[in-house]
Length: 170
Image 1 (cartoon, rainbow, N blue to C red):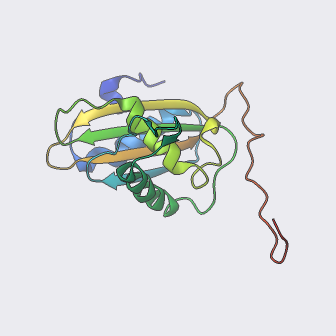
Image 2: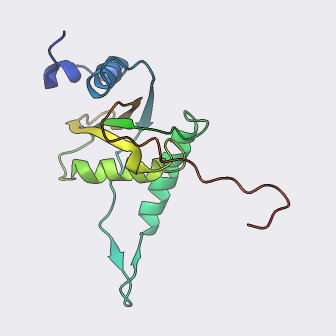
């Protein structure tokens, strides 16, 4: 068995190491699993903004948050033909262009929300998660790994909503 350490999960190097990082991350999140997908999003990693409230007390998303989530969702659609069901593990390495303080959990939440209905049916299926922020001034990006995950907390009951049949009122 190989020792799994931060140095092993994140080998030194730039873009050329991303595929190796992703494979090691998939192995750490879902040991023994062979089915995983890797997505690399170029540019500054997006972060879920804090909830905003109307005067009536209802929550809403900012336009910037909605646009970032839509961009991420389109990238996920390129890799996932249909949402995966069952337990899933999500790993992400966020390569930031600067040292600005941004919470890793907010960047993960952005990915979780963008993947709903695209990469997974619902982010409640994610039973293992790993996120880390790194600095790469020249090549900011997000490397995402989604893998099948075995857990005693079975999420196989999370299934896609039935599609309405043509000609039927829904």
